[in-house]
Length: 425
Image (cartoon, rainbow, N blue to C red; front, side, top):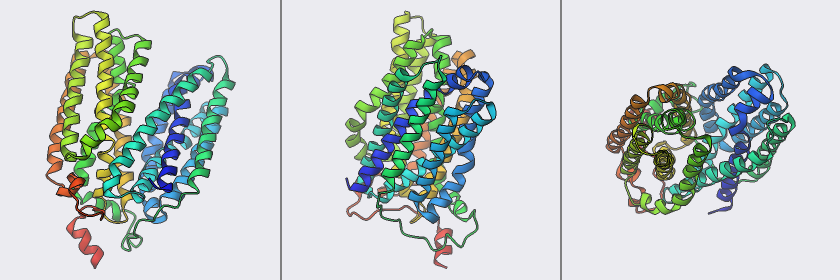
């Protein structure tokens, strides 16, 4: 691991640590501490998603033209200002504006950091690099949330101001760390600057493998991450009688599984076809939903229901550990030379869209229609397996299984024939 990659990983850990301080307590802060009500608190969470959906299409273009580092530094400063302002805000208008700045900055960080990892890695080292990123993100979120929970006082607005100030400080420290990174710049694509703003998006949409991966990614994030703190938790409380403390234990089990399993499964994942790994995750998550079904619809004891519910989150964590060294490197390998930032932003956009729709659909369904909720998401998980198998047919042998590569040359993926011809012209 080179010096640039070490700094990138430190940056990932710091940003996750800062977010862990505040994200779990946003609702309580806005609705109760500032006394703005549950509707405003719900709008704040929606603003995060909307801000991400607005800025991500432009972020990819900026990363391609200017490079990931300048875009990352601007995003970090924006997020720091948003976090600090959020901690000082007392009115609904300033809270929403601050949340928009924080959400936009946080959203742009993801593709910028992912592109820097791509630029500082090879096909052989990329899976391990993204696995380390995911590991540190979860560790940072967990530690940040744990410390933040001990610092916060629901009766004191100043304690929340301190939390948001610490988050802002983490982003500014990250600015100082990342400003020293000397990452190799990806080869420049001469055809891109002269094209219309939608030119590179048209090229991306012409890449059938990338389009199929985006569809698969939407289902993945919709059926898993989009349900953690909405539909699945509502189902657990309403159908399985899970207490809030047990729900916290389930979330901790998810993080613990990721931390323990991440590097244990890495060698297994690296030696298998990526499409088969994703297909296996679909099957694992189908089992997880079946176990959740037993927790809420079975007739066992409350102890068994609680154990089953916690096991559901742990199984999701196992699937996440398998995906982290698989999805992001595959996006990078599908991107034509110089367009990794565009492809990373497109995939981040798909993720944000799924995370915005997932809670809106899963929350009411999980709270009231218990059996249909479990059946629907069990089928979604099986759909992941089907989509993964279909995706494998669109990939080259090396894209699907990088361990087959006999040289250290990075395979950037197959651009559509018409796009290649246009570039050559």
